[in-house]
Length: 291
Image (tube, rainbow, N blue to C red):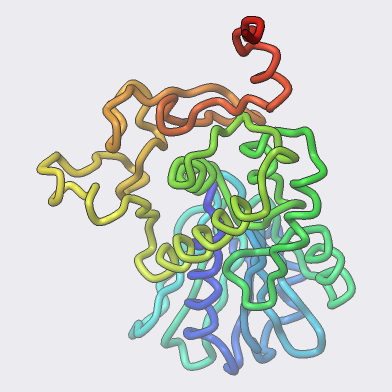
């Protein structure tokens, strides 16, 4: 499923291609035809994202809300001389009035025409998005520090933190040496702040480069003299989808386990399991009598 940086980049592309322009909106597939007719011929004001949700704003308080899901795609084409006939199951097509740009939506989980109140309702249910300037990381921290759930589970909960998916989850926990099964309430405030700061930086880079790169300069293929990653997700990563391969830092085989319905990846040496002080005390060897 696309992660938050993909939706942010898509919003930026839609904004650049259509923002402020009159547009024609249709549904070649037919499933969105009635709603498309309502905004057809109006001005597209802009687009923005919150987490994995995309909002395209039109005149007269109309919003098209899109969630791509696992297989959805929204392709934006600019600088065209002619808009071609749609190919495949295009649920939503947006065309600039001057026909120099068009965008096709296919396979999305959600595509609905809504008003501002419904838009606010959707956004209010989401946690802070590291890519948004108005995000409040303390909102997420209040839930994390009170939860017995694993931090790897909490990071994927969009009501706790918006936009983080399986790749960013695995990578930010590795970079901060935190085991994915560690209970949220055992994290220190400084550890959460480091995770948040890391996510902000990594996800912004993802928007710029349109892929997820998380390895530090000393662990790139060039620096280590190793082969580049060969994976359809692209990008250089530490543990994501590297099960059984040696950790780039310590050489320990990367491990995996299902967590919150998705495979979680970690290095057992770089991310040791958390042991509470109570457990440490109960398992510590007994001291002999003082002499």
